[in-house]
Image: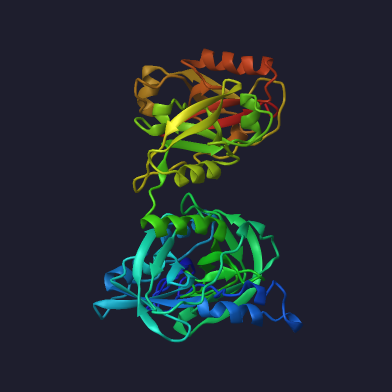
Length: 500
C-alpha cells in the first residue's frame, strides 16, 4: 500500500493509502466513546493509570457504519477531493505520496466501513462526510451487535462532517461533547473506532499539535494526535480524560497504509456548531466574499503603518462579488468581521464561511493609515470558490531607513508589453533586474515582475515607483508594500529597506 494521507473509509477492497476519513473495507478512524454518566469518570484514572472507566462509559455510544456503493466510487484508482487536497499538502512539503496502481473490481458494488458516535438518545449519530459519501445505503452496527438502517440527516463536505439517524425503538447510550479549546499539547486522549472492521478498538496517545492546516478547506484547524488510528476509524470520536468528545478522527498520514502516529481530528468546538446546523437544516450554505488574501507580516505592517502584525491583506478583489460591492480594495487589511478579530487569513476564511448567504456584516478595514468600517452582504459560496486564499510568500528581511530595494526599473514600452503579454489596461514599471544580495531578492521580487502600485498608490511608470519608494523612506517607514503583477496574478510583496 502506498504512503498517503488517507481518509479512512474501509471498502471491500483494501483501498488507497490516502488516509483521511472512511476506509474501503479495511479503513477506520477512531470511534467515539459513549458518554452516559460523566460523573462516573470525572477525569480520574483508575489505579495504574487505567482508562477502563472512560471506555466503559463511552464504548456503548460508538458505532460502526457500513455503506454500499458502486465500485466506481471506491476503485483504487480514484480518490475523493479531500484525499487529493491532503496529498497536495504533503507533496508541497516535500513528502512524496505514491499513488496506488489501479485495480479492476470484479463486482458491481463494494462495501465501505467507518465509525461514528451517538449524541442523542433518539439515535442521532455524527461521523465524517467521506464515510458516507456516494453511499447507496447506510447501515449502523451498535455496540451490542444490533444492525439498523440509517437515514442521512445532513452533510457538509467542506468541513467533512455528516449527521445520521437510526430508529432503535429505545433510548440509546450517548457521548457528550467536550471543549477542544482547552486541549494542550501533551494532554492524554483516547481514540475509539472499528479499524479494519475487526471490532471496536481503543487506542491512547497525546495531543501532538494544534491548529494543523492541511489546506483542504476553510475549516482546517486539525488536532494532531499520536494515538494509533487506522482504516475504518474515520468518523469515530477522540475523547479526553473526562470521556467527552474533543474531536472527530478524520485522517492520518501513512507511508505504508497503517498508523505511524500522525493522525488528525476535527476539533469539537468546530464540529458542534456544524452538527447543530446540519440537524436543523440538513445542509450548510457557506458564505463567500470574493477576495484573495495573504498574511500581514511585520514588513507588511511596517509598510502600511500598522503597529503590529495581524489581519488579512487583500491581494485581489474579484469583480461582481460581495467584496467588490462592499468597496474592498487591494491593499486593504481586514482586521475584524462582525466585531470578531481577524488575526490570520485563515480566521477571515472561517468567519466568512460560517456566515449564511444574505447576511449583512461589518468589516473593520485598515486603509490609508486608519481604520474604516465597510458593510458587506455575504454571498453564496459555490463549489470551487474560495472564501480567501493565501497567495504570496511572506516577505523577509530587516528594517532600515535607506530607501533602496536593489532593483532596476524600466517603463512599460510597447515592446515590453508584447514580451510580457500585458494588456493595455496594466500600468506600472517592469523590474528589469534584481540584485541577489538585496532586500527585493530576499522578498521574492523577480525580473519581469510589473510593479503596479506602491503602498496602495497606483503607479504608471518607473519614475512613479522610485518617487513612491523615496517618499516611504522619508516618512520613516521600515519597508514598502509593492503590488506586483506576475503571470496574470497580482500579489502584495513587502520589501524592507534594511537589506538594501
